Length: 257
Image (cartoon, rainbow, N blue to C red; front, side):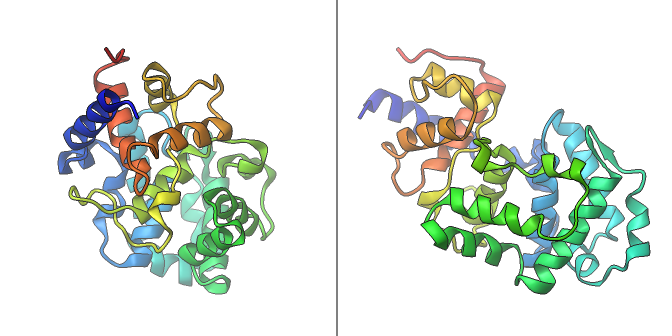
């Protein structure tokens, strides 16, 4: 093991995994709630549109929740078709009202017929004891009701080698818990199985530190970098998301001396 690299990663993990992280992160949206189902629905919707400018992500995620009368679980369980008209004008980059309305329908199917988001991911995980099988099964269930073709691009397909950054971030939120109390620790998936939410920031820093050699930011890269992070913490490798993302956003690329 590279002790210098472990020391750097641990130092940056503690530096960036602090409660003030929440102020600039979309995780603040599910933090508005205390009931498990509200937290996971708000978290899933916020993570689903988490690309682009972070201020815009937070603003539009709040808007989505407001359109649900600030009661995500109650809305999902009880809405009727006419209630979905409130989403007609919604837009976040390429995610629009058509997508938002289908997300509501799919979530209603998941909570009314599949025992909720956690159970879907758990069922998928148990198939192969892997996050990949959990993500693959989730996508299958999510699109098991009639859907507009355009919406299929908004849920990552790991069977086609997608890095699934937003879904892996959502799982980190739901599964992990540590000193910072940023992540919720609500779900019973094993945290040692989680995969790094790989985006341009975490990927570039990982390559610079010798944690990732694959050039594409895809599922194979996710597997590679997560496996290398397990050398430093086998039980909680994804905690280093804070270190890699924080370094990428705040410090630019660094070479390890």
